[in-house]
Length: 111
Image (cartoon, rainbow, N blue to C red):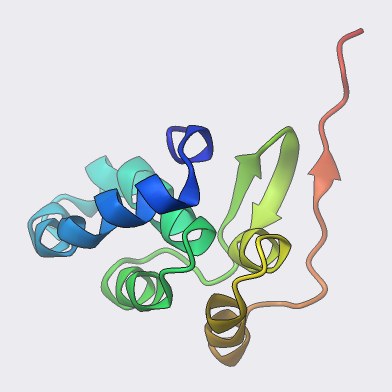
């Protein structure tokens, strides 16, 4: 994922201006689903609670969306935000119905 390669500070600067583009992308949401997932993950990693809220309200992505992050499969937005210490994002996700007990799976090494 592109988002996992960027620092939270860089992501926050890049994600902010994208709000205006979300409406355009919604017209072809299925085609842009991967982009929305990356944007949502980047916003959670960057502690951008407003963007997380906006994307969850304006796309069909679930609050418990899970992704592959840093060698771990099934990382929820709640996991990513809490692991990064982003209290406002964690509070928003919990208030929005995120499952606090969701688990992640480390990927098996091929060695």
